[in-house]
Length: 222
Image (cartoon, rainbow, N blue to C red; front, top):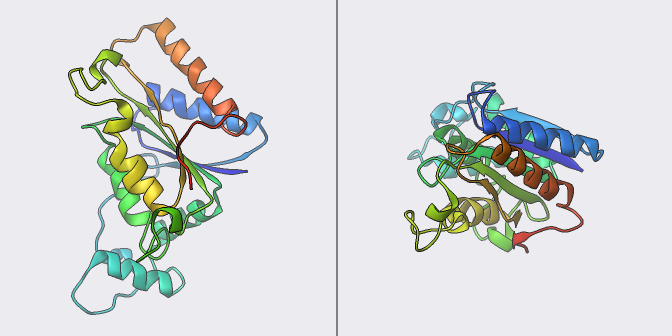
């Protein structure tokens, strides 16, 4: 199996980085191939703009329609986008490893979604969800959130569970493109966690990763 890890954190000593490193170790040990997109490390540009395309239609500029036009021209995107699209196409499993900011992900990762999961590549008119262009592939979000577990309940401070909070990504991005989506793994209370707590979280993540294939925890499956 080919696995793409898209990693969005700027600090190598962060807990998010530790989760990324663990995922790489576990998946490699299982005999799978891992490719890493370290968005901060590679200086990924998150801003969708006209020079993302080798050629444009010359009509009123609509970013999504220009994506579709570029896809028809055998991926006539800028080289950085082509490189990421190639990784997506070759990957059987996408792991997105990121901190949780503002009930979502950092701008650099949102920009990766915008620029790489392009119209004509990952989805198209009438080709979404169960008909998405990435159907048959799997995806899972691994996140780190700062507040304690009791905050992430419908009756808690945030008035939402982690799954409810991340619905726009799991459903509106990953499933939208056709991915079979695993339940996210969200490490909670990272700001207040002690060493033993962090070890336990990594142990729980290791178990999830080791059993993704034989005991998948599906959130959305087509």
